[in-house]
Image 1 (tube, one colour):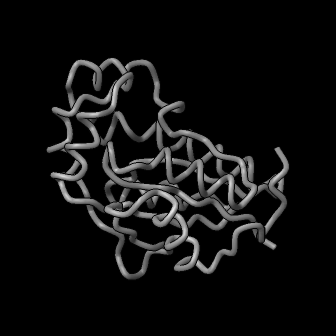
Image 2: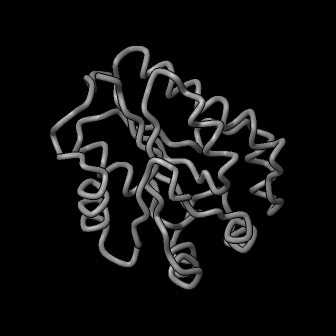
Length: 179
């Protein structure tokens, strides 16, 4: 069976890391944070409050896609966080051939996300860039393989709802999850 990659997407502060960790734990899959794939130049720009351009994002998205492909080629299903705000960004991730790439779009109001960001510390993404993220955000289209889940509920409920909508039972795996 073809391995699966769940891309947990949304704006900064939507709860991608929390949801991805819970999904990976429930499914027994490996998880990665997309932030770990950013080149230093991207991190410096974001830390300075400068939004990334599409050209800045392409090498980052390509690195994530390649990671998905490597794991898929090894028969491993994975979960990865990635803002994936625009369809064109998701198109790059969908170029992975060794895994079925599916999306979990964590949707929340600007007010909800702004409150979460205000409580977060130790992250290079400043709250000042939130407006640019909402400006870039293109929700999943009806032809995209994924689900949209509101983040107003506790993380466990968000993940349970996502798994149910995706048709994935916790503990069931389309492919081996060995590291």
